[in-house]
Image (cartoon, each protein chain N blue to C red):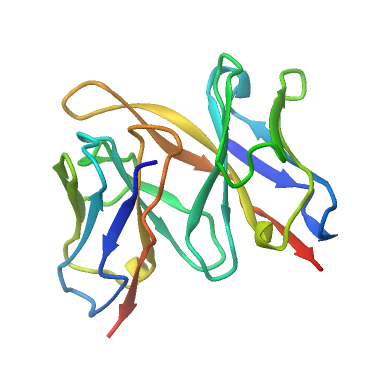
Length: 107
Length: 125
């Protein structure tokens, strides 16, 4: 199975900040990498797929980059509704493993 | 509107069985890949099982031999039969569509683009 490792596990930031979350795969997954946002008590929401493609309806302040084993999710100009937990996931092979999550908290 | 609605969760004793249902509207379950993902209390997301459009099924090692994913074309629903339940199966269970998405530079990539609201399974000893 492909292991996904996110860093940091938690992050404190303020409204208006730019934040970056990283995700590393245990082997090359080319660009088969997705990012999800999850708020407490809610199902996850797909933000980015294919490493950098923005899912329909997701604000453009969210962006993704990377290929191979190293990926980043960047949120420009943080908004109050962006404080949540973020997960990366590989879709290169089954099982479709997730990272352990990054909790973005308000400073 | 595309929607998934899970049901069937509850409190069950270790060793018991439970069947979760996922009713779909706005999509055809037999025409897409459907998955189950679970989340233990306070923990991250854990992929459980998938049923492909052709009917092939796959499972996480942790549930293989105990859980069975299936679908009913007439009811347009997906199911997760869970047997020999363990305390560590306690989680919120989500069904999701594993959708084929077109990449910005071309190509087809898969992502869970539609999720249900989740149903809670608690396995007690």
